Length: 264
Image 1 (tube, rainbow, N blue to C red):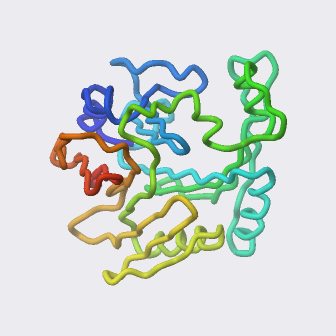
Image 2 (cartoon, one colour):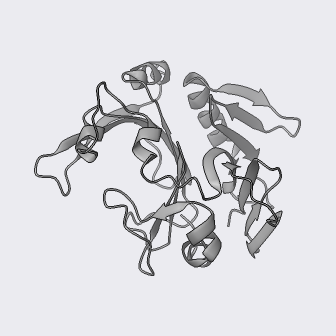
């Protein structure tokens, strides 16, 4: 969730509208963005970025960050859940969410495993698995010879290969020490590799995504600091685009870029 100034830029600026990625206002209609929109979904090939405005329908506060990790093999979440629940002093919940809007009959949508976070948590995360019933219901015009729960299958009709974004590769989060230890523990159990940086921070490296944990201090508050993405290379493009003091796009290599969102 971002403040109004940031959201307006990411909703209305020609770069985010026409160049960065295919963008819509969300599932199931994938409706076009307009001046009333309070949720932006920037679609990559296998990953997508959600940006909510301050008047979002979930009533979540500005500055809150949520990260969803998903498995791509049927039953993969069972293993993740088992590893997480080795922590016998921590409560994890598992739910099966059903797609029960705009359908005559509710359809199995996804499983999710998540912690019971305090209500005031600024950074939360969860693990999910699409149900094998979901894609045949969402895409009745396609033929599925076997169960398919991959993110790429979900995104294939939304991804625009002519835009800059290919995929999200990772993010940097500013976190208090205690919360950072909790997140590092969960991701390590879920299969991420933990790497200690020279500055005392921690990198958690998965098979196709990483999370860098940056210690919070008096100069920078808890929150999302930056997002790394794989990008299409275009000729004669600027190396840096500054939109606001706290919102910048950096193209630091022909294949990679960063969105910097200074926590506020």
